Image 1: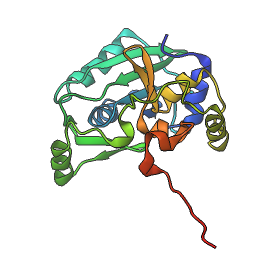
Image 2: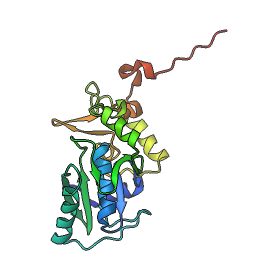
Image 3: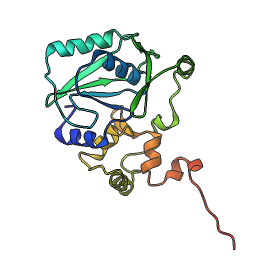
Length: 217
């Protein structure tokens, strides 16, 4: 099961971001832009039936609509694979990070930056191609971190409070939705960003990220 009521509430609290996009209705051109933007970045999910203001409007789901969505994905260049699920008249489209970057739609090349999908200029497309295969430090999975042994639950709770997010579901599920962790070969791992946020001893994993202050008399 990909979604439940508690997880939907959490995603609505979190709002649109690097891996989350809300769309009120089916718009082929707009949908294609978001699909290639996610494929050119780190992947993500599109929720059809939710407005930009996080209002759940729901849509009429049919096999025809699902087929139209798959047509949009196939018409991207190169064609994209999209996984479709549904929950309470909301369609959830999951686009994985592409292995044949860069991807384009009829409107051009797009990439996900924060909560927006940005059209790429010629120079930006060249930079994207040059950087193919390079995973940013914060997104790299940390194999030295053991969950939950090295995980600081108190830091996690403080983070949720300061972010005004209500803890719904398990810590693993929340971390996954925040793009800070995922299952890797049956073992839950945090990426480096997650370790920097929630390690009990950050200095053990990244000595260069710890400042030591000394007071001289």
